[in-house]
Structures are given as structure tokens and as C-alpha cells.
Image (tube, rainbow, N blue to C red; front, side, top):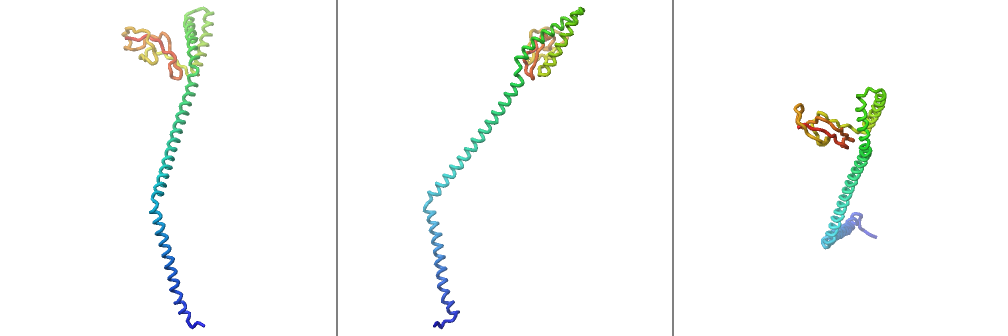
Length: 200
């Protein structure tokens, strides 16, 4: 039978616990030092990882740049397509408009020729011609075909075609003093320049 008191038994157990704790601490320290040694012993693995990361980042940046470039090209293509469609809508009837100008010219000549006649039959014909000219003018306006009749205006080579030049003391130089044939524009684009006489 043991003759030691509980206090004595507790004192006897303490050194053992202290030794075990010291052993655990020593083991953890050794493991940490071993991990540091492992990291220091393998520098190539870290370098390869950094290179792989840099390569992945470069590939991602290149892919982003390619995506932005494709998006810009698609946007430009869409804009050009929209412009082409708009031009096709605007100027698709240009050839027909040019052909109709000759008809309008003939109607206006008939209108002018019948204006001085007192014959009732010719007057009746003139009324019909007047209505036809008005119908053509309304049609032209509907499709944005505008007349260029520059009498008294400064000469504009973008809109006018000078057929001759003449001295004229009543007008400023480079002024349109006669219109031999009216011009026309379609949506602002000249489809036939006005044929004019210009003062010197």
C-alpha cells in the first residue's frame, strides 16, 4: 500500500508532463525547420510556378486583346453595313430619277410653248400639262429630288456647269446670269448640274 500523499503523487507526475510537452515542442520546431529546408532546397519548383503563372497571365491578356479587336471589327462592319443599306435606300432610285428628269424637261418646254397661245384647245392642253408638271413636282419632293435653279446666284462648281461666260455690267463677276437647263439633286447629291451662263 502506497504511503504517498495526493500532493506528492501530483508532484511526481509533473516532470513527466513537462518532458512530454518539451518533446512535442521540439518535434514541431524540427518539422518547421524541415519544411523551411524543403522550400530552400527546391527553388526551381517555385521559379517554374512563377513562369507558368506569368505565361497564363500573358495568354489571358492576349485573349482579351483579341476579343476587343474582334468586337471593334464587328462594330465597324455593322456600321459600314448600316451605311451601305442607308445609301441603297437613299440613292437606289437615282437612275430612275435621272430618266424622269428628261420627261420633266419636255413637259416644262410644252408648258412654256403653250403659255402664249390664245387657242382654246391649246389652253386646255396647257391645263393638262400644268397638272402633270405639278404631279411630277410633288413626286420629286416626296422622294427628295430638289431643283437647282441658280439664276442670280454666285457660281458654284459643285452644283453648276458653266456653258459660257459673258460680260455683264449689271451683275457681279462670277454670277449666274442665265440658266439653260435646271439641275437636280437627290438627297443632297447632284444627279444633274445646272447648265448656266456666268458673268465675267
